[in-house]
Length: 140
Length: 379
Image 1: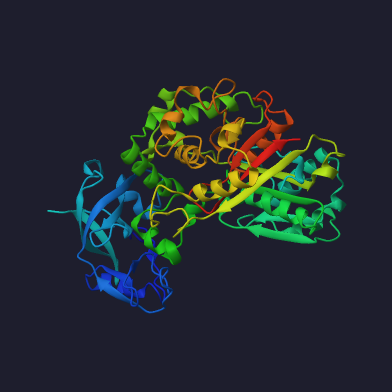
Image 2: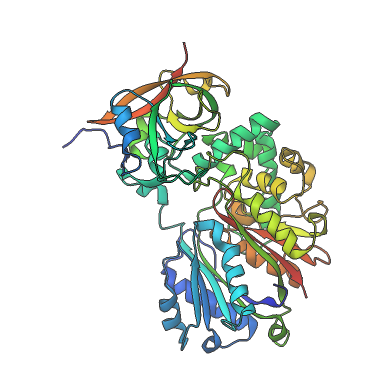
């Protein structure tokens, strides 16, 4: 009988999002930026919504962010997350641009210590072989 | 579209386990709606479905013996599509694409399991940026917005509770409602956290049920069995940079698609929020009601929480009696379609919590997804 923990849902990269996840594997938080008008966009997509250019590049971010909102998940949750309850999921605003917000997990901090506005620092967690998520810790 | 009316409504019982298939309950509800209107099934020539509906147009048509569908289509984005389905039906009638159009929703969500529990092991598309981090359930996706609303405006869990308490009072008067026992604010505050800051009693019910409406021209509806419910206006909206449910990436995070639907709705109807006699707000989760009060213009941004205090949503004496059949929180959760039927009952004058002389009723569909809304009027 298997005693392995239930599998977590894993991101399934596609042509557009692959550079984001490849960055995570290398320990870099990357964001997509328009090569023409140089504006960031998230979620990733082929076309710039500002200038309609199809050319884009991926830039490494500082990894600094601010806690914009969060939830604390209690049961019932997916079996893969059961061992972690109660656990927090954060919405983080990136230092480079307040319009760049991303969802992420929180590491190393009890959920009841979280407050909107706290400074966060990205960290990378390998949740399956070759699958790395950008997660967040309270900034030192 | 003041030339179109809802002429008939039908619903089967609401249940945790109805014991019949969705296609069976769908055709039962449609048959009841046609009977209510006094129209034979063979006259139906249009159908509009929800994209998440498991029953198809041709399956419905085969069961009801409909000889030909001249107009059919579907509206996407789950609970955001209910009022839009009615709006599309009304447009079909206005453009003479069809004469008699049925919209329906049949869903065994009580016995059929939670959609999120079937999350795949590999998640692509937009959800690859939220689900792998544990943001999986609809309640989590809305709780993220609720906490930000609390932070920016001081909205409280007790104000959310006031929504649940108000709607339960209305459900207690509705013999078809699933939850009819008294609910107090203390009960709400004692209910367990599901996705902090949201509690179990901030969440809608899990229901098996089916409902249908039949639309035709107002002129024709006046010769049918019931007082017509005029489709005064319908509108849809998405807003910019929309991401379904995890809608956190637009320029202003506390603006939901409802704000955009509202602008068109009021302009098309030529009325103001102050003209509305009662409202049926999409209430999968209590904060959605607070967002909608603000975005449909019943109060200013940030004042939605306070608006729910002091019984202002309650029949019969509140400023804006809302979800007068109990809504998704206490009557039934069938993707908000029961809200449309209650809107019809209000302008007919047949609700179990009837607002006196109700002439205009606002009905809204899912907030936090591409949404839609209706204004129904007494003929």
